[in-house]
Image (cartoon, rainbow, N blue to C red):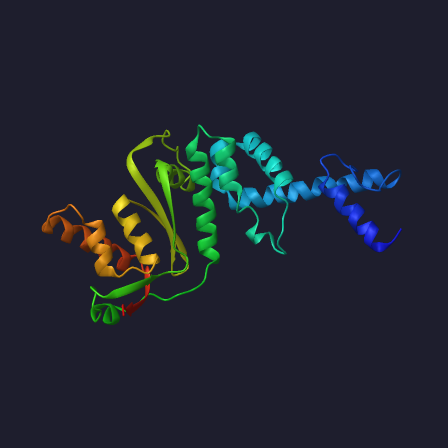
Length: 251
């Protein structure tokens, strides 16, 4: 048997649902190779537990391991590093638990915070630079670690309680649409629940819209005082959260 055939056989043995399934290994080697078959799954389940720690704590050992093993069978690793394994897990959990939206939302928050920790560095603009901007014509660039997702439940409160090892609140549907944004400030991953206006504003700005045009869109229907307050609060929060890392004048 050639080396290539041996390698392919070992791969089939490890990936098969049943030890030895589809492989060329039999007899005396079967018992020893069963260890590799199991260890592959144990390692990947441990990887998912580490990345999705709060999701694991929320749904419990048995439900998490069953979901993780089924996910592993459908989504084997495709990268040289396990650091990026599990990207599809939130969507997988949404399909698996369609009546429990908080599970997939918790998983998304787990994943986004982990990715923010590993994300690209980008220092925020200084107060001097920000103070000199013509905000009406400026196109902003946000921190590369910034991620947004719509949420339908009080997932941020649940995640926070799990992180603090206190009793999490019961699941509640949010009274109006909201979103969670995740980013990293310095070395610390952060998250914040935001309203639909800020979600829309960030989405427009990330698409290259100017700050002036974005303000006009998100404040439509508001009187001048309310629009000024909304824009001022959003901008103040972005500066405080060190989200703004670049700015250029719109042509």
